[in-house]
Length: 393
Ligand code: ASP
Ligand code: MG
Figure 1 (cartoon, rainbow, N blue to C red):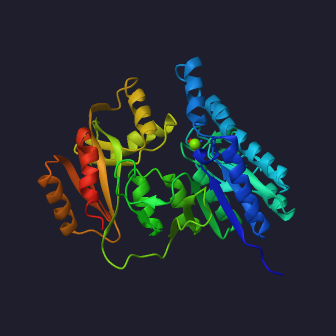
Figure 2 (figure 1 turned 120 degrees about the horizontal axis):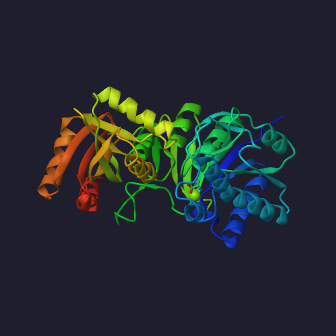
Figure 3 (figure 1 turned 180 degrees about the vertical axis):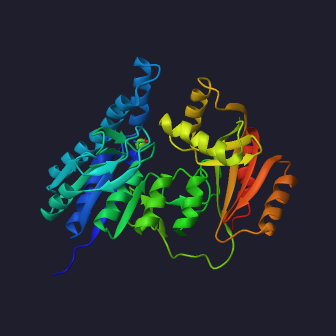
């Protein structure tokens, strides 16, 4: 008996934004299934649905309860999953949709930014045995402790897809988007951003931890842990090369591979030594279910912190209510260069010289294993990105 190939495909919100796009996705899924491959599809909410649901919550409540917010937000993916399943059944393709909890996506107890702790996808396996395509609502799970429905943080349906691919031992996990692949920089900011054909997990983790929005950062960490091969490509074209992410890929030489940024860096004042302050802040954020910021860089009692905007917004809202920390300034942005290999002083000197020559004032610079980071004034962020990108050949 030959073992059938299994592919997990994740369709992003933009690729399911209207009924035509949903029908297009269904056609692609149907063709894959007809070619003899088992298919599990993970969907995001259609277009801007999640943002609209958040706005709606804000119109009825100043500070929506996080449990209720999760009840509301999970609706978005539920709309997509049922519509995709209907469109597939219409084409004659047997399909069934499941919510995160029906599919056994188990999370911790936190709301709005829960972590997947286990997968027990028995119903998914049963449906696959019946030769059905399974459509799974991304971005959501259930806590086996509280029995509550949870969500995985903005962009979290990538993580749902990787978790399912890991559990099912899928041949690969395809993240399908309205862009063609992963680029060397955000093409909206850098007109000559170039496609990246191949990356390893470590490089993509570095990129997503420092602002690349192409994938949910936790999804890449999970892909590395579970050894899930990732493909990032356009939903509109099944033949595109896209970007492949594996563990063993290496560039043949040292080179800058991507530039990413976070819009805001907060300078926080906390009256505690570095390690305690980091712990305290993380505890405060966890307790209030804000989630962990991407990064904390400290000098004495001043701590520089950055991360996804929704986490910074939460830190800001929370600041006014207590005295654990004070936001001293938020005039900076981070701009990061990810390298193919370990960086040395030489790379730092080249980048610093380039920024200096172009009159970009560097507020702080530092290197990590495979990356360089520059905190620059927010008005100079886009220019700094373009200048640093000029190093990428
Ligand atoms: N719909 C959710 C969001 O926009 C999850 C996702 O798209 O992955 O954040
Ligand atoms: Mg979305």
